[in-house]
Figure 1 (cartoon, one colour):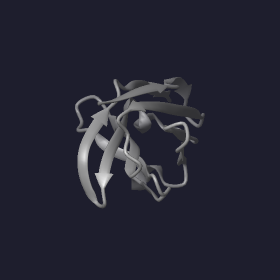
Figure 2 (tube, helix red, strand yellow):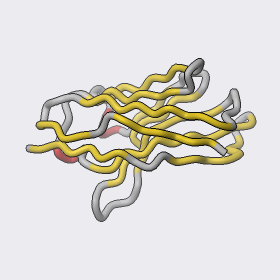
Figure 3 (tube, helix red, strand yellow):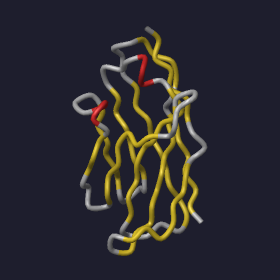
Length: 120
């Protein structure tokens, strides 16, 4: 089992910044992918950004150039720096971890979610 604990959500004005953090503990394999997903009211959960244990990253088109994901493998933490926030970035942000064997996903874990609200 893996436990994911998120922090850093909150209320911010449009154009502002927030930094989300997620600490993972438990049965974490050396090859894994950590990421952030978000879910707005009435919408499906969507990928925001993710980063592999080799530090390859990918981002949703909507956040390119505004958000940056990073990780500390020694501490099993992942961070999402969100700049130039827009009202449409509002939602519950979930931390995600996938344990991998080569390219196959062995198991997937989710955090409890943290609310991000961007006021216009």
